[in-house]
Image (cartoon, rainbow, N blue to C red):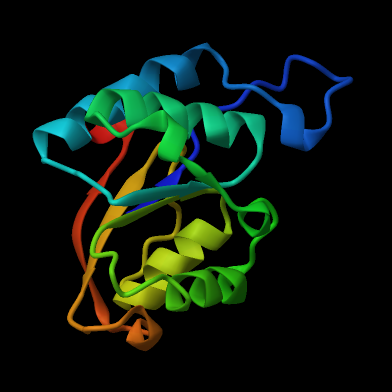
Length: 159
């Protein structure tokens, strides 16, 4: 699962980008997406999040909604400013004991990753949008260009 953080606030001029919180809409949309994911029986073995405040908040809300233990949430510094190659490397280094993984991060790299893995043109993964991609490989090391299939793509507007 590739989940883009929910809508963030630009209200505080003095905050650095990494410290920007969710805005009202983001706080409303994240639980909606989480409830949808729970209905879809989404049950990742691990959730890995960017360290930014808005991203961690999104990951925590989703975790609560789907019943994932928040204390197991893993923070990956590389996800904050990740480019497509960073995401590919992160996915390729996942342990083969993991079958279901959720990454929570940022655009433009998440949109590019969905397109890269699936071969489908997406243009934009909206805020709080989530793509489930299945791969017909037996090791994360083999996950690569065009070898995934989008199983669902949701956004707050689509549900």
